[in-house]
Image (cartoon, rainbow, N blue to C red):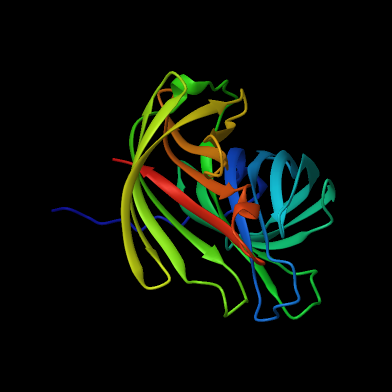
Length: 251
């Protein structure tokens, strides 16, 4: 006779956040006079309540980058807070998800110390639970891409796209794109270059007026990234107050 034994769920704690996570946050507002904003980067949690990291942000064509530092807390139900004191003064409420072997593989972020009539929220995805060194070889193969601009300016054309990016593991990437822009369908292809720094932050670059993306790798298995998050740092080629962000998953 088989007997089923119900085991209690493991309580979450600071140790449930350990390792490096890529993150992407976006500002949401209906106020056309508010600068659109987005940030992408890496956060590294020590499992004890300390967090460090690096970021690239954009606010109405102005790009900034720097280091992050602060503290975090997680209570038993998998909710908590992150408070940055270096590089940003943002405070986030967080919820953990996709927990395996006691470590969260993802979390949702909501900034709670912004008193303006706007919302800044986003997601973070586990990069690796242990320290690792990355390079262009960490990004190889076909990735399905989706992007969307965010703007409060109703006079700007609506825009969105999907694509396949093919990374060769040596710094070159080709794309095949399907885009809806201002109610019209566009398809095409492109050739770009890319870089990846040792912490998994990188860039995808094109010549001329093409897109320039800041990227953060995630979901690394056997040295290969299975996903990434990105923002366009070259929105000045367009017109108006907008940001363009997205994500990619390996096929």
